[in-house]
Image (cartoon, rainbow, N blue to C red; front, side, top):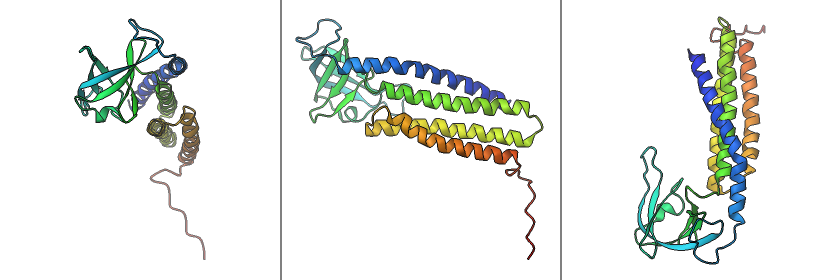
Length: 241
C-alpha cells in the first residue's frame, strides 16, 4: 500500500511538473512582449498591447495572511471614482505597505493592472503581471519532475523486491532523496525571487545542489544493497593486537 501511495504521488507530481515545463516558453514570450511594449500615446479605451501608467488612490488593502486560497488584494480607485480590484502573488515589497488614501501608480497592459509602484519608486507585479512567471514555472517543473521520477522509482522498486529488505531500504533512500530534490528546487526559487536573480540562476543553483543530492542518493542506495544500513548488521570483529 505504501508503494502504491508513492506511485500515485509520483504520477501527480510528474503531471504537474510536465505542465509547468510546457508553460515556460509561453511565459518567457509574454514577459518579453511586456518589456518591449511601447508607451500608449493616450489613455487606452480598450485592451491594448501598449503600456499606460495611471494614478490610483488606495481604498483598501488586505494581506489575507492565514486565509487559505485567498491572495493579497487591494482596491484601487481611479480619479473618476471607478474602483479597480487587483490581487498579488505575494505581499512584498509594495502591497504590504499600502494604506488607505495613499497614491500609487498602476501600469496597465492588455486591459489589466500588471504592476503597481509606490511613491518611493518600489514596484511589484500583480497576479496579472507577466514578470516572474517563467521562473515560477521553471521552478515548478524542476521540483515536480525531479521528485516525481525519484518517487516513481522508489515506489515501483519494492513491488519487485518483496521479501528483500535491502532493496526495500534502497528504494526508501531513493524516495526521500527525491523529496530533497523537489524541496531544493522550491527553496532555490524562493531565493531567486527574494534576490531578483535572473532566470538562469534557478537551473544553475539547483543543478549544482542536485548533483550532490544524487551522489548522496547513490551512496545510500548502494550502502543499503550491501547491507550497510541493516539494523541487525553484525558488529565488526575487533582487530588482533
